[in-house]
Image 1 (cartoon, rainbow, N blue to C red):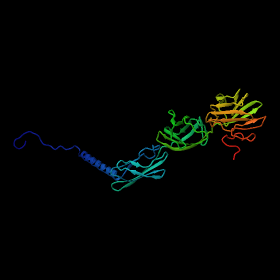
Image 2 (cartoon, rainbow, N blue to C red; image 1 turned 180 degrees about the horizontal axis):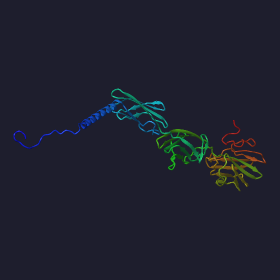
Image 3 (cartoon, helix red, strand yellow; image 1 turned 180 degrees about the vertical axis):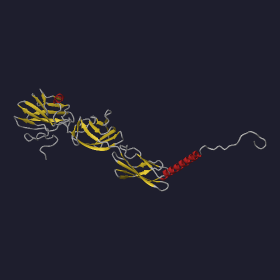
Length: 377
């Protein structure tokens, strides 16, 4: 009973935890956790860290890959250096983005090292370094013509498909000839490691060709330029002579190069000579005829002749032959396919004369070009 006569009611009580150690443990845990967070945060701030991309040990890094450096908060990057194959490279570092703004170009197959020196707000400094390797360079494995591998300086046909084999799949390839404009190569879609210069590109016969090859691979590796020298076979040339014997005349055209197809040469040969008997051997054309008219001129035409090495007549052969007493004259018109000196050799008279002049018995030797006087100065 309370004073004043009030009976009943509530009795105020103080409720205490059953175990005072629970409260102390919770407070201690919270306090300890706060201390750990503070210590870790302090250490994070005090000990500077940095990450460099690409990471160390990476290989086949594309040449266009960006290089970046990211430091821990409140840390300051004081020095950045980049080396390619141990040679220092000029560069700039962007503090805001962490990117390395490069005014240099990396090359395929280089070992690149990035170094960074970083300091914390309390002055603690650390140095970091990473090394990686750029993509392997593009290499020309071999070059083939008509399915046969060719070596530098080797003679190749003037009209042939040149196939360039590389060590990597390509996205682009080109070749320039003797310093001319680059010609795109046709990359094989089924085998992108091969690119072809089609036979529609004809090389001048009898020349030495300098090719500069350029290519880019699918991994951005490049072949900046590789020079390759090759000789182009000499053009097929015909040298002629006429032999007269007892009313029979034989015109003989010797080829500088063996014919690839004598039957095709026989089919392509036309002549107005009377009663012609034509035979084509490995390296010779023989025309036997009879009943010649001394007042007439006769034509010999050869549309095309191909050599075994891929050579051919630079232009269709067109020549005329006229016969006079003890004299035979021959001339070729509008072509350089016929070269040499047409001369006669008669078993009855023993005389010889030809298109370049020269009196009987004093003419130039076989093969002397009609362009040049005989005897030489």
